[in-house]
Amino acid sequence: MQVNDICLVNESISLEKLIVGPNGRLSAPEGKLLTVVVGGVEIDPAPGEYTGDIRLVITDYIDAPIEGMHARPGDPPEPYRAALLLEKDGPSENSVSAAYAGGTIEGSTVSGGTIASTGECFNSMIVSGGKYEIRDLTIKNCGHSTDDGKGLGAGILAGGDSETLLENVTISNRGIRNDAIVTGGTAKMTIRNSTLTCVGGTPEQIQAVHKIRPGKACMTYVSGGWGTTRAVNVQNDSSVYLENCTVRSDSWADGISSKKEWGPVKTRIYARDCDVELNGRHGYGSYAIGDCTNIFDHTRMAAPDVAYKVANELAGGEFINGSEIIGGRFGVMWQSNQGGRLIVKDSVIRSGRSTFIARSCFPNIYCENATLEPGNRCVLQMFDSDDPGFGKSEVEVDTEVAVKDPGHDVTKPQYHPVSIWGFEQPEWCTDLQATFKNMTIIGDFYNGITNAKKPMMMPPMPKPDGGKPAGGPGGDKPAGGPPAGMPGMNQKNYPINLVLTLDNVKLEGVISASRAQHAVKTISGSNRKEIYQVYDTPRPVVNNGVIVTLKNGTEWTIIGHNYLSALHIDETSVIKTPDGCDVEMTVDGVEVPCVPGDYTGDIFIKAKQLPTPAMF
Image (cartoon, rainbow, N blue to C red; front, side):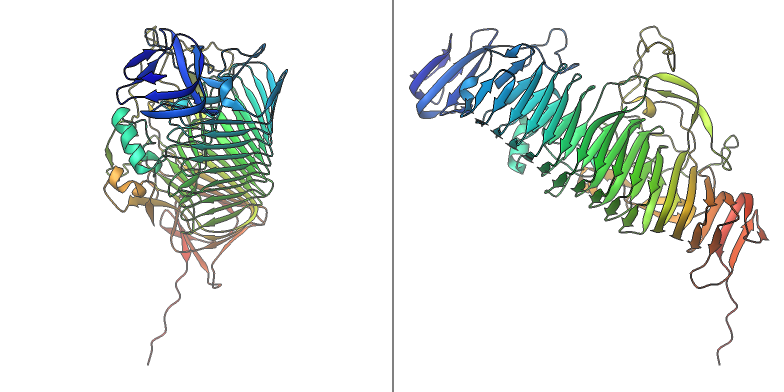
């Protein structure tokens, strides 16, 4: 068969030879899709000559298998194609089965074989419903995707209410936004004893794709780096459980997003006994947003930028049972979070710079028997958001000087009305709460937040009824509101205190309000590594209260100057200096003994200076 012009293929056919001329193009009938398979490998046929087992396969369009990913009214349907399309009632005849070689399908079990592709937006497998077991399968997917958020071109895309078990599966994906695993709907996926590897596009490929689809080739610099491909992308109310798996990527390790509703956070990714690593120069390890929490249980995760990113509402996470978390720059970063809980227990976080950074938000941190190793000695930094927002090329930082808000109490946790997922909460703690228990810490804690206005990533969307959404516990779901995941960005900006509890802790370091400053004044794509790079100088409290509780035998060995707004020392705890000198503490400028008790006001603590004898 020779194709020199547009050639309409009306039905599936087999060939032994195909010649595509310089202007040749194969097309499917209206409402149909065409897939070309040569020697068992799906391809996008370029001009040239092909011989061997050639299949031209015509399939129907299928419904988007991920909730919320359907085309908007009037838009054409997405061109989903898959070597194996597994539906609720069994494998579909709409599969491109010519691209599945060497394996068997018996009922709901797929055993062995290889699926290989080099074309754009070709899924190796789509599971839209039912229960399936996939064993000993190899996937080699080397195309690009127009939209990994819709799972186009993913190695395995699971949606609907499907339940899928993958065991001893190897996925090797290469290409821009060509994810290994994408799940959506209420799908549940278990992955055991498997290897997932994703290699993103080269700079030349990224530039070429960007010319065709601007902004779709890589993530924005607001993450401090850039990347092109996720290994595991969990959306909607779906979940993925990984056990004894190896995950490798050169840009993003795993991404996660979900629909928003009032209720507890949900575990979206649970990784047990896994090894997750980004091999490239950029990228984060894992991401949780909205009502998601990712759990890493006896798992190693290493990323060149931020190991774990947490954004919006009540998202959180857990590092437990001997997990080792490594961030080339930072351990955990929060943005727009409204009280989500992070648990670190019996685990290690190592980072090139700070362990925890919270940008204009108020998560809840609980660490017990953990080892924290920040490269810059800073355990926790709180500072104004330096996120330029979507679609912005640059952002000026450190433009605000804190101005005292007479209505803000820096001596105790503050509660205000907030909107979470569009649900109004009349009283919600808007301070960052952090508890450290049964551990030794060498490092510093700074609250450098001003009352600067947060950037607005998206404009607030009007509600259909023009009023506030009803809801909250026992209420109805809101009729409208800001975009999912964004309400925390678009509500009143409150000053944020640090509420720090040290429970049976030996700490050597600074705890203080601070003046947080970047090394540059404007952050853009050209200097994106400066995002999050904040330097603190201890300064008296303005609106950035520092409320500290020492209990159950805590020993705080102070370093340098420490400015607090409230301090509780129980009868078993002590503040001391490294060299055994006395501690000097003043409250509202008056020196007081540093003994157990409760103190509020402008508190300043440092080592007492001894008079220097004259030298002769």
